[in-house]
Amino acid sequence: MNPRSASIETSRTILRRIALSDLESLHRFESNPLIMQFTPSRIPQTLEQTKTRLEGQIAKQASLEPFGIWMADLKATSTPVGWFMLMPAENSQLELGFMILQSHWNLGLTTEVSRALIEYVRKQTGIGKIIAKTNHDNFAS
Image: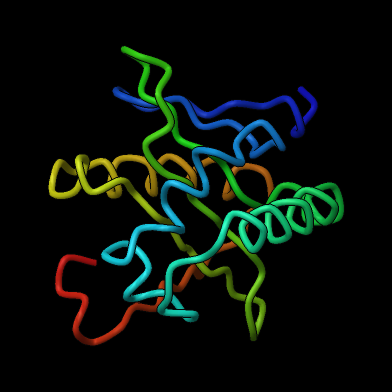
């Protein structure tokens, strides 16, 4: 199977690679102050900032395989509810990151999707150690 066309399923979601058509959904996450408060930039992004970042990520995607960024769509509605990344980090580790719409916080989706994504990448690479960083005030994460 071509990793670019691969999708990853969980009980409630389908993960697929991000695409330019995800701009509106991605901006819905990145323009929300509550979602952005614990990110490195800490401030809501403009549509143009989100577009620039999305285009950059898509341009790098092929060179990162099987790592990268996935959009999580609910199976029941095909609605994007979050994005998840698994990217190379320091010391041959991988870093896990995500953003989820507030309406889907505290439902276990992050854990469900993260486990599936980690398992997918482990099968592709055999890599063992994965890290996730969070702000010390971000208790839910």
